Length: 395
Image (cartoon, rainbow, N blue to C red):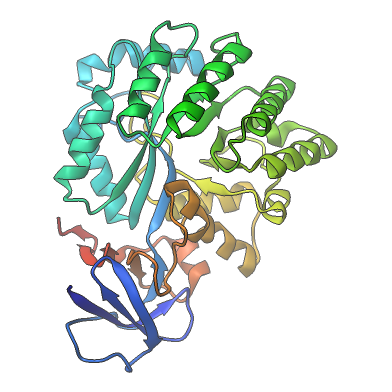
């Protein structure tokens, strides 16, 4: 098995070390200059080392990345975005493996080595989006790992046949299935949750529900999901994505819901969009509620924004929530890396022996400096091999 030493780097800004890798795994982390001469040596030049970033909420099948610019259109509501996307995507050839490969390549260039991506499953596209994503992963020779959430963007109960497609996707290797606004999209939250939880239990997959609904309507759906998770025994298998309503509620209401999420083992994924209410992140952190950060869609029919850089997403989270101290800024970076391990079914994701050898080097004084400047990724190692050098893909 190939042995590679990444020498003289500073994990999380600590003292310089040598990272010894064997195959796809970190074998040892030793003081700089003390690793044996066996195998290949890479000089890290004293750069700051971080674990590869984890994008816990993406939509890599939707992008028009690599195609000519597409102007924003349609109504700026959830229903409006869905309708606009359905009207325009075929003309842009969405989904397709080429654009998805381009998006994943941008993720890699910015140091993301693992992704949890929602992939549209609906009556028009069937499972073609999942096939395109798998083709894109293969095109990059496995340099980036992608877990798939089969996602019913256009609704579940209002589109008869979608539940069956979700069931097929779960049987074909999707690690989770998704849901979306059971109240406002399907207008039948009980039926949507009945169907989703049934599939999750039978197929032994996770469940990730997009919740855009605000205020008490959103809170009502949180309560339904918490109750279902408790009763079905799907602890640590359920994620709420976005969940904008949580930040809009009173403090006492927030605390009750956070207690419920802690008890049920429910995780939270956010893209920290501007102009939304901040989440009660301290209460989430103190209860051990897993929080993952993601890019959402980038350059797609929902929004023209995004470049795939998880450090920028972490910075957006820090700014939205008013983080300023060194400890708080480091926490934001952890959410985009070590803290998101569970979202991609990793027991540990860090620069430690036994972890997958996913490492990012940047020219920064410390973690906080890296967060606020988002410098170029000098080197990206994924699964023990160099996949990006000086900001350029090597695969």
